[in-house]
Image 1 (cartoon, rainbow, N blue to C red):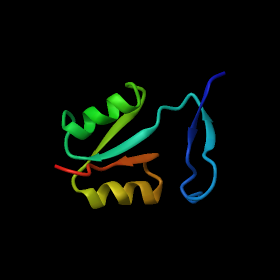
Image 2: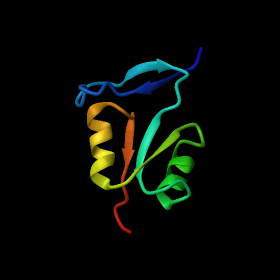
Image 3: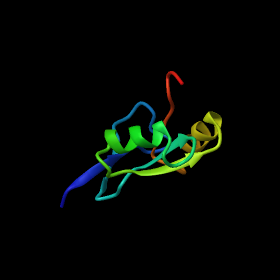
Image 4: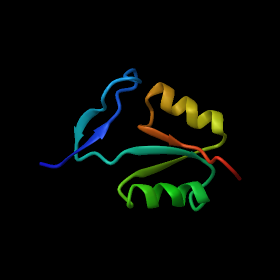
Length: 77
C-alpha cells in the first residue's frame, strides 16, 4: 500500500504523520482556474484537492485550524 505524508496540525517542527492514499487538500487564495490553482496541480501532479479561499488570511486560517493539509500563497502577483 502506497502512503503519502500529511502534517499533523500541531506538529509544526516534527515529521509529517503518514496517511495512506489520501490526496492532500491545499488551500489557495482565489477561484478555480487562478494561477495558484494551476500551481497546485503542477506541484502535486494533479493528486491534490485545491480548496479556494477568498483572502490570503483565509488560507492561513484554514491551515491553522486543520481544515486543509497545506496552504499555497503567491510571492508576487
